[in-house]
Image 1 (tube, helix red, strand yellow):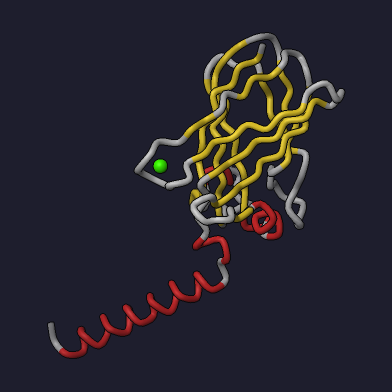
Image 2 (cartoon, rainbow, N blue to C red):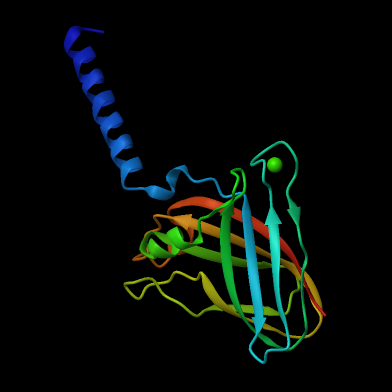
Amino acid sequence: MNTSAVKISLLSLLLLTVALVGCRKDDDTENEIITTVVVQLKATDGSFERSFTWNDPDGDGGLPPTVEDIALPANKEFDAQVFFYDRSKSPEVDITEEIEAESNTHLLVYSINGPLNLTIVPTDTDTEGRPFRLKTRWTTGNPSTGSVLITLRHNPNKRLPNLDSTGSVDAEVEFPVRVQ
Ligand SMILES: [Ca+2]
């Protein structure tokens, strides 16, 4: 490698470093660890209210996560909200407010698997009126089982039609679901 090539490489490295540091600076959630995801479900007729927890306080690896089955009464509507926590620290850190404050750069995605009679529709938007989906309406049909995969995406491109697959994944958890 000649000297000018080395200089160019060093310059690229420097620019890359500046870009990475710059990115971290604007990006408060970058260093947060999400160990715990809670789904709160309240029936719109007031007959049911429960929270279900996906919990892996030691993070990736180590002990496996513990996951509560979401069991819901059939043929009802529920207001749902997802909460995110870092329980690797004591006391735990509630990350939900930060995500809510940065709604424009976050997006939740729900994927229903199996023969589950459940629909999920958003009841919120970000500050620019685009999808956010921290709060949703869940509607159950007849008894059935399956699962719901919940993904928190960071810096999605909400202008694209395939917004659900853009950006990076901050957290992804799967809850078994039983409509009964
Ligand atoms: Ca673990």
